[in-house]
Amino acid sequence: MRIVVDYDRCEGHGLCEEQAPEVFRLDDAGDLVHRFDGRDVPEELAEAAARGAGVCPVAALRVAG
Image (cartoon, rainbow, N blue to C red; front, side, top):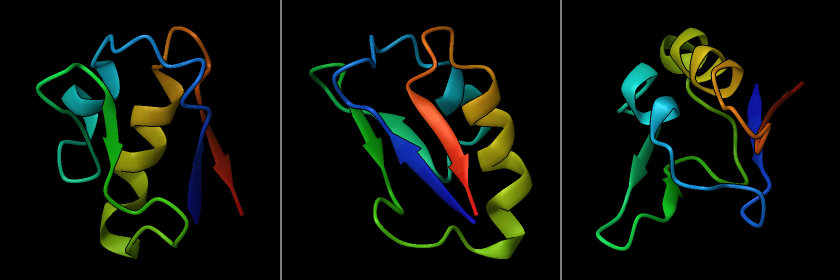
């Protein structure tokens, strides 16, 4: 499973980071860092990653395959 990020939509609310800090974090400038950008999220983190994507208030995160 991959998480696709629309970085232009992301407003840095940080809700994804609260749900899955192993997958998402905000850097010092408040920009999203997706640790598995462009590659599959490890199976053991997939559920948390999907939760993180699901709470995004601006729909900047999408679960793909």
